[in-house]
Amino acid sequence: SGAGERAPAARAAVSPGRAYLQQRRMQRRSREDAYRSAEQAAAAVAAEAELIAVDRVRHRLQQGELAAGPGQNIANDAYLVPVAQAEEFRRRVLAAGEAPGVRVEVTGPWAPYSFATPPPDAAPAPAGEGPAGGAVAGAPGSGER
Image (tube, rainbow, N blue to C red; front, side, top):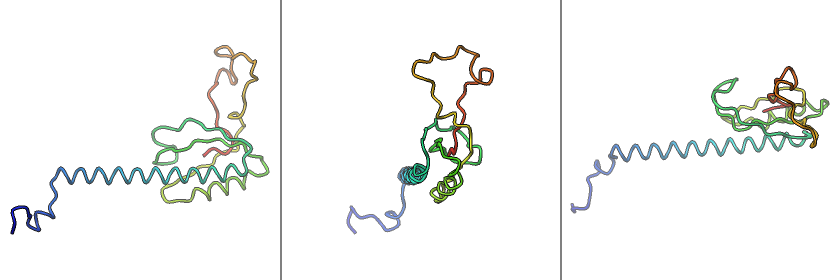
């Protein structure tokens, strides 16, 4: 056998450092695939929602553990949906989100606070004088996911 050839057992064995790097590479690819699938699912849900919704507002993503179980929040949208179409909206959005590892939550109906905007010339309310005794935090809109 030549000096540059390795024995079959030596070729099959992978150094601990190389094994670690291979494992990290596989984890990264798996994570990237999961994000790609999640974004595709979110796009499918949004496409269905926008067929019925009159308007859409994107809210800040929720961080940390989600209320209904484990996972990562990839979309937090409010949709303004006519009352007469609320059940169809719910059905279509939930059906669009049926993919492995995807959970879609539709809540509401809610008062359409997410879609209320002050007139352009309105001054902001002084501190403590907002609605509900100064509670000015945004409320979810109809049909959040």
